[in-house]
Image 1 (cartoon, protein in one colour):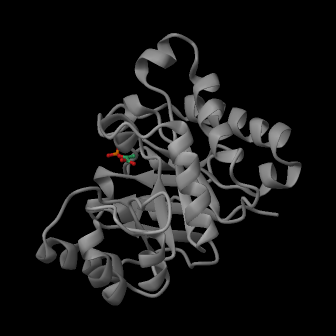
Image 2 (cartoon, rainbow, N blue to C red; image 1 turned 135 degrees about the vertical axis):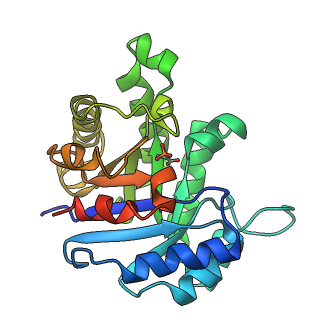
Amino acid sequence: MARKFFVGGNWKCNGTSEEVKKIVSTLNDSQVPSSDVVEVVVSPPFVFLPLVKSTLRPDFHVAAQNCWVKKGGAFTGEVSAEMLVNLDIPWVILGHSERRSLLNESNEFVGDKVAYALSQGLKVIACVGETLEQREAGSTVEVVATQTKAIAARVSNWADVVLAYEPVWAIGTGKVATPAQAQEVHYELRKWLQENTSPEVAATTRIIYGGSVNGANCKELAAKPDVDGFLVGGASLKPEFNDIIKSAE
Ligand code: PEP
């Protein structure tokens, strides 16, 4: 089964309501391949989710950038998976490296979050990736496999999971992985899925790349056989996000 190209835009902790309206208006005016060819999901901060959801073109979808690890309740400052479902938000990004490093989210905690979000009916963009130190030590594949294992240990249904390979050294740095580097890790991740989940999961799960993707480098990355799309940070706030979506063709 062919894997539909997936482009996610992670707006992180950016934007005012005026800026958000402008970004949505640019997205709504953009000429992009049809939703049969590419799945586009943008992820504004929580507070702008209702605004974006109600004004965004219907062929694009929205994602939250996080959600709580279990049922909501006395967890000040958190947003539960149930709340996202209640607002009809279909997707959530979990395990982003900024949360892993700045908020100390462990592999197990991320795995628990992925499992709970899926159990509530959300679709998940689950992020993995190595630091520069880990890459230089030659442990990239081991690191991303360990991160993926913590998810796989808790998840049996991968149909609603997109795996995002995001090398930490490439996020927000302008240092994009080369197409060969991205392909190598995506290949290894797919092999890991093949050996540890099932051949079907390995063949159908989208593995997307994130880390300084822009309008100029996306085409070459997208041409790699195991790169099924992108998770885009900085460039998703700019009109060039359009060009990245078009790299699906
Ligand atoms: C991200 O934060 O998911 C990301 C890939 O950021 P950037 O594109 O800015 O490197």
